[in-house]
Length: 248
Length: 248
Image 1 (cartoon, each protein chain N blue to C red):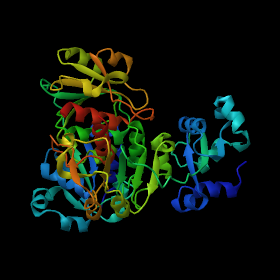
Image 2: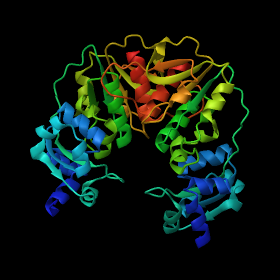
Image 3: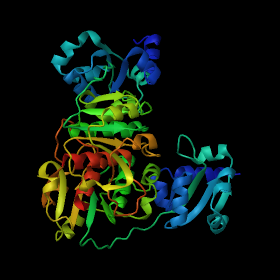
Image 4: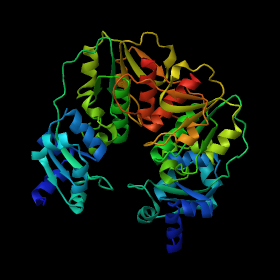
């Protein structure tokens, strides 16, 4: 039986303030959970699961994490789940301290200037992982990568990409030795970029694009050529197309 | 004042059954509304708006549609809106009968095999519009393009892309003279495709990919090369990268 205090604690983790305070985040559902338990990148704090899913869980994982498992009833899972349809298991994991000193030479680094939508953020992290991008540098106002909706849509890629939150202007100024490209509406055509082995690639906010101050740090504006009439592309789509081209 | 019957009617349009019955769909928010009214592709049935937004509306549009406008109170807008935060205006538009005979020669046609998520569907339509794709052919189980969440995320691109729902197998068999490419995990690398002026491009369901029967209609399997470790790409992202490459 879940205690009232426990329910309250888990519910509080829907909010960044409490995730930051306890250094813990929530992940849900059998597929994501199996991946997170198997790759063991984030330390498990506790796992709340319904009986039927415990029976499905791999024996090695079951043995390894047995002291952290708690079987709950469906109605209890509903209380601690943020999903519309709770999905068998809710896990609490320790956040990792991001690597703050990392080498971005001869690689592509993604810079996010105020990405707002958790779904977009999750999709960007997942796509970055697909293309082997190791580092994502976010403005302080970019949505928290431990937001439950972000966690759900990254599909465990969160454990393979280093994500830091920092003052973008300062960070970009420190890295002026690497070519800095900024996504914009009227820049150089994406397919005309020549050196694509080493770059910093800036993506802007869904509604406002990249801020002027950040844009001023860039060496070159780049654009995905438009053939039709849509006013803009979704931010995660634009990021993905750019990463594809840089890694093509 | 909105009548009870009116509220019930508008709410019913959240469901495909009633959209099909009345041939009407819902769109919300000032930006989307301004675009839909200005491009005048869908016939307006009725527009429910709060006073402050009527004052902002362009005079020409105001004059043109004056007989179809109804000023409502915020609490009334809440009743008929499907958004968490209702956004000034709810419009009802007549659905268009899709063009069933269209020319796909010397162009790229997108085929969607059971795309399920309204957000993905909207993003795909918007990206197709960006790349000048004129026709999207959907399986009967693909999410309805007049679903309110699809409408919101297409950002008016819905008025520029022809979308039909049909039996994919029959449709593909009728169009065997055009090269048919199918997205898959182990196919030809996307950047190795040679003739990209004329093609049919099949995208599959978010969880299950393209069905076997549909896959069997394809001439070639194609894949977005993976460099990192993510298991898969989001369906809208994969579609967008493929359209970019075909139009590159």
